[in-house]
Amino acid sequence: MGLDLEALASQTPITEEEKEGLLIQTITTRGELDEFEQQNIERAIKWTLGKQFDKDTLLSEDFIRRLHKEMYGAVWAWAGDFRKTDRNLRKSWQLIPVEVRKLIDDCKYWIDHGTFHPDEIAVRFKHRIILIHCFVNGNGRHSRLMADLIVEKIFGLSPFSWGAGANLVKAGTSRETYIKAIKEADNNKIDLLVAFARK
Image (tube, rainbow, N blue to C red; front, top):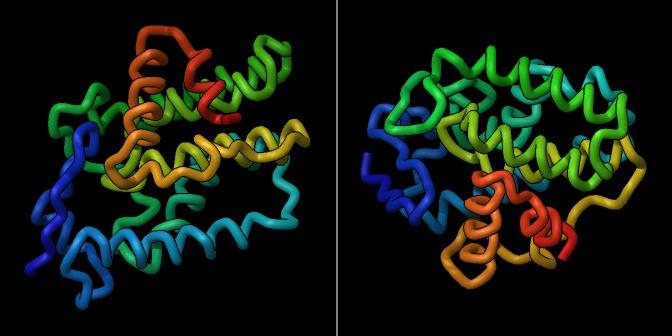
Protein backbone atom coordinates (compact mmCIF):
# COMPACT_ATOMS: atom_id res chain seq x y z
CA MET A 1 0.00 0.00 0.00
CA GLY A 2 1.26 3.49 -0.81
CA LEU A 3 0.17 5.19 2.40
CA ASP A 4 2.69 7.83 3.47
CA LEU A 5 2.23 8.66 7.16
CA GLU A 6 5.19 10.69 8.33
CA ALA A 7 4.83 11.13 12.08
CA LEU A 8 5.28 14.50 13.77
CA ALA A 9 7.56 14.84 16.77
CA SER A 10 5.94 13.10 19.77
CA GLN A 11 3.69 10.99 17.51
CA THR A 12 4.15 7.23 17.49
CA PRO A 13 4.68 6.01 13.92
CA ILE A 14 2.26 3.45 12.50
CA THR A 15 4.02 0.28 11.33
CA GLU A 16 3.54 -1.22 7.86
CA GLU A 17 1.61 -4.10 9.44
CA GLU A 18 -0.68 -1.67 11.27
CA LYS A 19 -1.25 0.28 8.04
CA GLU A 20 -2.82 -2.88 6.64
CA GLY A 21 -5.73 -2.19 9.00
CA LEU A 22 -6.75 0.87 6.95
CA LEU A 23 -10.33 0.33 5.78
CA ILE A 24 -10.41 3.10 3.15
CA GLN A 25 -7.98 2.05 0.45
CA THR A 26 -8.14 5.35 -1.45
CA ILE A 27 -6.32 7.20 1.37
CA THR A 28 -2.69 7.84 0.41
CA THR A 29 -1.61 10.91 2.44
CA ARG A 30 -1.62 12.08 6.06
CA GLY A 31 -3.97 14.93 5.08
CA GLU A 32 -6.54 12.52 3.62
CA LEU A 33 -6.26 10.26 6.66
CA ASP A 34 -6.74 13.23 9.03
CA GLU A 35 -9.86 14.26 7.09
CA PHE A 36 -11.48 10.81 7.24
CA GLU A 37 -10.54 10.38 10.90
CA GLN A 38 -12.02 13.80 11.74
CA GLN A 39 -15.32 12.87 10.06
CA ASN A 40 -15.41 9.66 12.11
CA ILE A 41 -14.55 11.56 15.32
CA GLU A 42 -17.39 14.03 14.68
CA ARG A 43 -19.80 11.07 14.38
CA ALA A 44 -18.44 9.73 17.69
CA ILE A 45 -19.04 13.09 19.38
CA LYS A 46 -22.63 13.07 18.08
CA TRP A 47 -22.98 9.54 19.50
CA THR A 48 -22.16 10.91 22.98
CA LEU A 49 -24.53 13.90 22.79
CA GLY A 50 -27.62 13.65 24.94
CA LYS A 51 -26.48 10.37 26.46
CA GLN A 52 -26.17 10.00 30.22
CA PHE A 53 -23.05 8.05 31.14
CA ASP A 54 -22.66 7.42 34.86
CA LYS A 55 -19.25 7.21 36.51
CA ASP A 56 -19.08 3.40 36.43
CA THR A 57 -20.00 3.23 32.74
CA LEU A 58 -17.67 6.01 31.65
CA LEU A 59 -14.75 4.85 33.78
CA SER A 60 -14.51 1.30 32.47
CA GLU A 61 -12.23 -0.54 30.07
CA ASP A 62 -15.27 -1.38 27.93
CA PHE A 63 -16.18 2.29 27.50
CA ILE A 64 -12.58 3.37 26.85
CA ARG A 65 -12.35 0.81 24.06
CA ARG A 66 -15.86 1.53 22.75
CA LEU A 67 -15.15 5.25 22.49
CA HIS A 68 -11.98 4.60 20.47
CA LYS A 69 -13.94 2.29 18.16
CA GLU A 70 -16.65 4.93 17.73
CA MET A 71 -13.94 7.49 16.89
CA TYR A 72 -11.92 5.40 14.43
CA GLY A 73 -13.94 2.28 13.53
CA ALA A 74 -14.85 3.48 10.03
CA VAL A 75 -11.16 4.10 9.24
CA TRP A 76 -9.09 1.44 11.05
CA ALA A 77 -9.86 -2.28 11.49
CA TRP A 78 -8.00 -2.30 14.84
CA ALA A 79 -9.97 0.63 16.32
CA GLY A 80 -10.92 -0.13 19.91
CA ASP A 81 -8.26 -2.85 20.26
CA PHE A 82 -5.36 -2.28 22.62
CA ARG A 83 -2.01 -2.11 20.83
CA LYS A 84 0.13 -5.25 20.56
CA THR A 85 3.57 -3.64 20.06
CA ASP A 86 5.91 -1.53 22.21
CA ARG A 87 8.10 0.57 19.91
CA ASN A 88 9.93 2.43 22.71
CA LEU A 89 6.79 3.49 24.57
CA ARG A 90 6.90 3.85 28.35
CA LYS A 91 4.33 1.13 29.09
CA SER A 92 4.65 -2.36 27.65
CA TRP A 93 1.59 -3.41 25.67
CA GLN A 94 1.17 -6.41 27.99
CA LEU A 95 0.59 -4.05 30.94
CA ILE A 96 -2.14 -1.97 29.28
CA PRO A 97 -5.15 -3.71 30.94
CA VAL A 98 -3.48 -3.51 34.38
CA GLU A 99 -2.53 0.16 33.94
CA VAL A 100 -6.01 1.04 32.69
CA ARG A 101 -7.56 -0.68 35.72
CA LYS A 102 -5.26 1.29 38.07
CA LEU A 103 -6.13 4.55 36.32
CA ILE A 104 -9.86 3.84 36.56
CA ASP A 105 -9.58 3.02 40.26
CA ASP A 106 -7.51 6.15 40.93
CA CYS A 107 -9.94 8.38 39.03
CA LYS A 108 -12.94 6.97 40.91
CA TYR A 109 -11.10 7.62 44.17
CA TRP A 110 -10.34 11.24 43.16
CA ILE A 111 -14.02 11.77 42.31
CA ASP A 112 -15.40 10.08 45.43
CA HIS A 113 -13.04 11.96 47.75
CA GLY A 114 -12.88 15.34 45.97
CA THR A 115 -9.10 14.96 45.78
CA PHE A 116 -8.77 17.56 43.01
CA HIS A 117 -10.93 20.14 41.24
CA PRO A 118 -13.12 18.48 38.55
CA ASP A 119 -11.06 20.02 35.72
CA GLU A 120 -7.88 18.63 37.24
CA ILE A 121 -9.41 15.16 37.71
CA ALA A 122 -10.38 15.03 34.02
CA VAL A 123 -7.00 16.34 32.86
CA ARG A 124 -5.10 13.97 35.15
CA PHE A 125 -7.08 11.09 33.64
CA LYS A 126 -6.26 12.38 30.14
CA HIS A 127 -2.56 12.62 30.94
CA ARG A 128 -2.33 9.17 32.51
CA ILE A 129 -4.13 7.44 29.64
CA ILE A 130 -1.74 9.14 27.21
CA LEU A 131 1.18 7.65 29.14
CA ILE A 132 -0.42 4.20 28.91
CA HIS A 133 -0.85 4.76 25.15
CA CYS A 134 -3.59 2.14 24.80
CA PHE A 135 -4.02 2.27 21.03
CA VAL A 136 -1.91 2.25 17.89
CA ASN A 137 -3.20 5.66 16.79
CA GLY A 138 -5.48 8.43 18.01
CA ASN A 139 -4.45 8.38 21.67
CA GLY A 140 -4.29 12.18 22.00
CA ARG A 141 -7.70 12.81 20.46
CA HIS A 142 -9.21 9.89 22.39
CA SER A 143 -7.77 11.14 25.70
CA ARG A 144 -9.11 14.65 25.12
CA LEU A 145 -12.61 13.35 24.38
CA MET A 146 -12.46 11.13 27.49
CA ALA A 147 -11.54 14.21 29.57
CA ASP A 148 -14.40 16.17 28.01
CA LEU A 149 -16.85 13.39 28.85
CA ILE A 150 -15.59 13.08 32.43
CA VAL A 151 -15.91 16.81 33.11
CA GLU A 152 -19.27 17.06 31.34
CA LYS A 153 -21.09 13.82 32.20
CA ILE A 154 -19.77 13.28 35.74
CA PHE A 155 -19.36 16.87 36.93
CA GLY A 156 -21.90 18.71 34.76
CA LEU A 157 -19.33 21.25 33.53
CA SER A 158 -18.72 22.43 29.98
CA PRO A 159 -16.28 20.44 27.82
CA PHE A 160 -12.75 21.78 27.46
CA SER A 161 -11.70 24.08 24.60
CA TRP A 162 -8.18 22.56 24.28
CA GLY A 163 -6.39 25.69 23.17
CA ALA A 164 -9.55 27.45 21.92
CA GLY A 165 -10.28 24.77 19.34
CA ALA A 166 -6.80 24.75 17.81
CA ASN A 167 -5.79 21.85 15.55
CA LEU A 168 -3.51 19.82 17.80
CA VAL A 169 -2.87 17.11 15.20
CA LYS A 170 -0.92 19.39 12.83
CA ALA A 171 2.41 21.07 13.53
CA GLY A 172 2.13 24.63 14.82
CA THR A 173 2.29 26.90 17.86
CA SER A 174 -0.79 25.40 19.54
CA ARG A 175 0.57 21.87 19.22
CA GLU A 176 3.95 23.00 20.59
CA THR A 177 2.22 24.61 23.60
CA TYR A 178 0.16 21.46 24.11
CA ILE A 179 3.21 19.16 23.94
CA LYS A 180 5.07 21.44 26.37
CA ALA A 181 2.13 21.17 28.79
CA ILE A 182 2.12 17.37 28.43
CA LYS A 183 5.86 17.26 29.22
CA GLU A 184 5.31 19.45 32.29
CA ALA A 185 2.61 16.99 33.41
CA ASP A 186 5.13 14.18 32.91
CA ASN A 187 7.10 15.92 35.68
CA ASN A 188 4.04 16.10 37.98
CA LYS A 189 3.28 19.72 37.08
CA ILE A 190 -0.31 19.53 35.84
CA ASP A 191 -1.30 23.23 36.04
CA LEU A 192 -0.13 24.17 32.53
CA LEU A 193 -2.13 21.32 30.96
CA VAL A 194 -5.26 22.22 32.95
CA ALA A 195 -4.88 25.86 31.87
CA PHE A 196 -4.40 24.83 28.23
CA ALA A 197 -7.50 22.64 28.40
CA ARG A 198 -9.60 25.65 29.46
CA LYS A 199 -7.83 28.23 27.24
